[in-house]
Image (tube, rainbow, N blue to C red):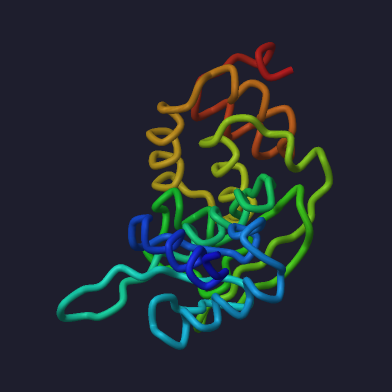
Length: 205
C-alpha cells in the first residue's frame, strides 16, 4: 500500500508549476495530520514553498531569478475559489486592478461573502472583510471595480483625467450591469456613472 507522502507528492508534481495548494486539496488521501506532515516534508525537500499558514506553492523556476511567485491578487482569488466565496477588490486594490495606479498596494483589501481574515504573504497582507449582502450584490465585473475605485478616490479626487479613463474602461461593460449596479452605489457615484455612460435618468431610476 502506497503512503500518504507518495500520493501527496504525485498529486503536486503531476500538475504545472505555479499552482497553489491547501491541505484541503488533499482530502481523502489520509488524515489531516498525515497530510500536514507530508506537506511539511515537501517544504523541507524544497518541492513546495510555504507562503503562509496552510498555503503552499509549487514554484516555477527561473535560471537567473530562482522561484517565481504569483501576484497577491492571484493568491487572493485562489483562496476565494477554495472557500467558494466571492471577493471584491476595494481601495487601492481596485485602483490597481483598473490600472488607475501603478503602485502595488502592500495591503490588499477585499470585501467577501465569506469569513473575515488576514493573511500575511511576505511583506504584503491580504485582508478579507465580510460584507453585507447589498455590497456584494453588484453584477458587473467592471462596474463593481469602478464603484470601489470611486469610493477610494472620493468626490474631490475624481478629475477630468480619471473620468476619461473610467469612461474608456466602462465601454467594455454590459449596459444592463451598469444599470443594475448604479442603483446600489452612493448617489454621487450613480451620477458619475450616468455621466460617463450617457445613460438616461429613467434608466438609472
